Length: 507
Image (cartoon, rainbow, N blue to C red; front, side):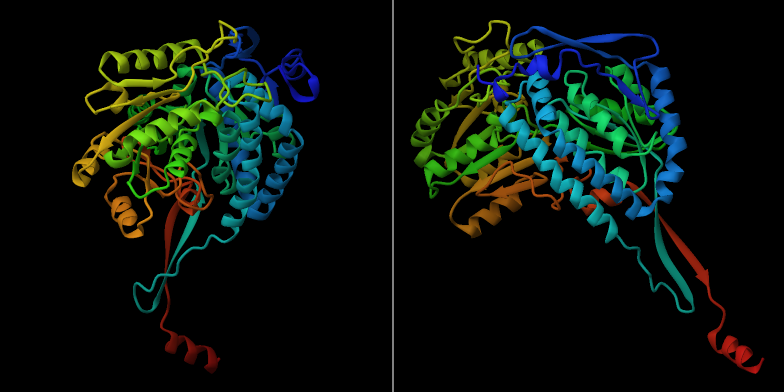
């Protein structure tokens, strides 16, 4: 196994480290002393323990955020931007530790996790720039009066992040709420908390006490955040099931809470017969995020709809190219595809693979546990299925793993109907050299974000989010910035200008 500078990454980055929550500028365990065992998805071996926050810990974190919020708002965008700049420097200085912790804890290849950390720089620079350019409106609603809009932060924001990009989400997702003057209580996934707890040290150094509070725990911890009366704005990235539960629990709290939800996807990639097959296959594999997070991404194009004229060649080419990807231990420098996050998730994904075979799809390659790797690791060789239809579970349900389903089509209208048939609509992509067809198809696809001759890449400044059960709200753009601010209108009745002028000049 090749690791950074020949060192044992677990000994370097995990052993001897004390992973604690951050509440009101203090590093702390849970008040009730409960902990969760963390295991290595590459080996199944125990790594360390993390604290579990109880309801009392959440209440302390929210109280700290509420107390810190007025002073944080009064700093203004310029003052808050200085904290962002300091935090950006600290993230860059700790790049290797943060990336390696995600590889160890989450199973994503360390090469990809370094890229995740690097991506954060654009967001740390971009959000202050957006905030500095934010303006209200003067509205000519009536003569002789002045009407204008102003914005104020909600106060305390609750943010719950997903397991598949732990450090990137813990850095980038809170930024728009913070730059607009809100304070934060953040909970990472209980499956992948190590890098977020390491980030707590950097947040502590860059931001005033109480502005950023980090608690770790399970669903009960998240529920305490969602239902807390002082948390008026919530944001969640994760499964549809949990997103629906958050909506329900927020409503049951007896308050109107403002939510943004970035949820699941069973995303369609539509391939026309005029494409360069090698290029389109590379796009399909890249769009699955296999070498980033093992296909554990809500944006992955796990449904590939290929025209019948090129179908067989497309499938054969994809099978060959998938053979170039090396499955291995996540913190091995030569690994392209790491393990999935947990044994429970391994069981889920392999269950779908078995169902695909049982329901008549053709397993072209992959789907097994690769030889020569730790038996207790959660490894799955990327599975490629052909002859998939919507009647099959692998064709219609989100798997969230390294499973690609290839559909055959020859009638345009039928293909569009099948692409839109599911209750998810996060992303889609269209591959053709005819731009008229490309834009016609992009318009017909019911998804919040559509790529043409591209896939899965995010471009900061463009609104990202889904339709149908894939969520509400848009991220990574000015739309998201404004979503963390409440708008008010101020009306001023002006006196008659002519009368005022005469009175002023006569005195």
